[in-house]
Amino acid sequence: MDQAGPADRLTGGDALRDRALIYLLLNAHRGHDKLRPGVILSMDVEDSRYHGSHTTWKVKPKSALASATVLVTISRDASRAIDAYTGRTPAGTHEPPPGLGRVTNPTYNTHPSRGALFTGSVNRALGARLSTGKAVARSLQHVLATHEELAPYADRLSPDFIAATPPPTPPPTRTEPARGAPDPSVALSMG
Image (cartoon, rainbow, N blue to C red; front, top):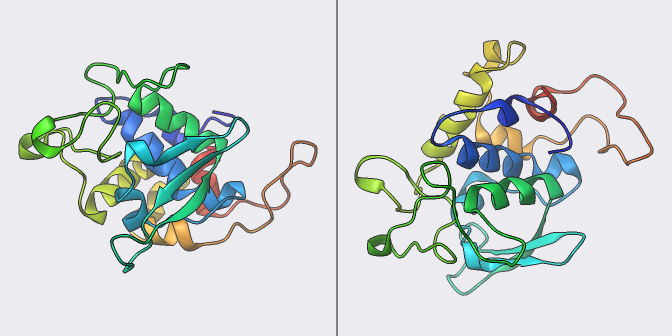
């Protein structure tokens, strides 16, 4: 990742998943499409397209027909976090790290290279699609608890708030440093 932050310092069995979720919530803060929790949870592994300099993902907009999809651009940081979580190799195959990456289960139609992108890793949902925003909220709360400046705001920062709040300044370019004090959602990725 280009910037170390609380999400990059996570440890444990769901660290790779939680890191990918956080980077997707911050996708708009990197100058890309805004992704709300419901859209993130509906993402499937096989719907990504790698174009060299960027990645697009076919997603179903909220409250749209089942057949309706749109292409969204995913930030390079989010794409790298997803690749680590799914175990995507340079050859394009998926070999999740045992015990750390995406959990698959044919019973729930989740396989290494297809099915729900974000899956559960405990109890009955082992390998099933994460189905509610509560899972995203738990991941976010876990990250916020590790950040000394954001921890006091943990009860007020929701995944929807992070995804919907625009950054205070335009995302920095490679030659232009960031200006102004970061808002809490930007600080989440910067640490």
